[in-house]
Image 1: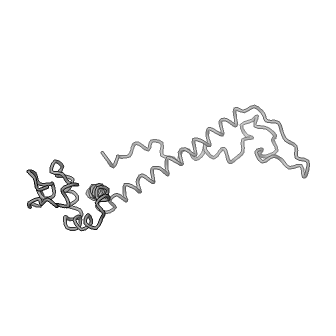
Image 2: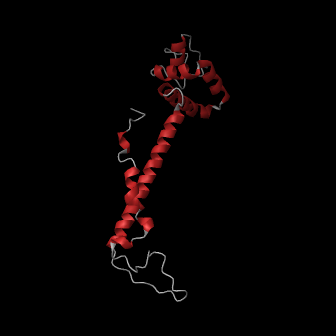
Image 3: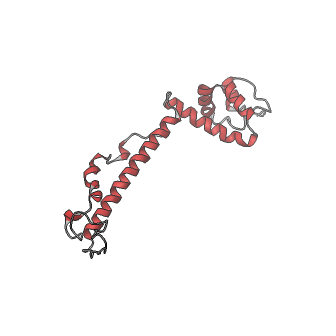
Length: 171
């Protein structure tokens, strides 16, 4: 900065902050932890080289990405932010499965509550409509629900019931 207060990087590295300090716009002196964690994970020299190679309008985004990745690396040294992304993708997959089961259960309940549907007669080969299973021609009994709709009742116990029980990565 060159003014009264050096930037966080110059404070941490115990050097004089020049007017053209590459860190000054992105690591202000009032947030020293931000640079400290980036320095610990990536090193000041590497961060300086990365910032110098980027156009000025992209440096702010790069710094915020470096800070995010450094925080993730401190929390999980092996996987970093990839571990958080993997966890979230797994959670989305589980929630999609729960949604599919709930939609199937809703459809099953709707089919049970509908009044008996009239049968449609197909003139050739005396084929049955696709929605009807076995030899029944309506949905009046519980046993006449197509088999592909009843899978929800048997598979719902395999789904994790409370996805919020897991520990949050950000608290």
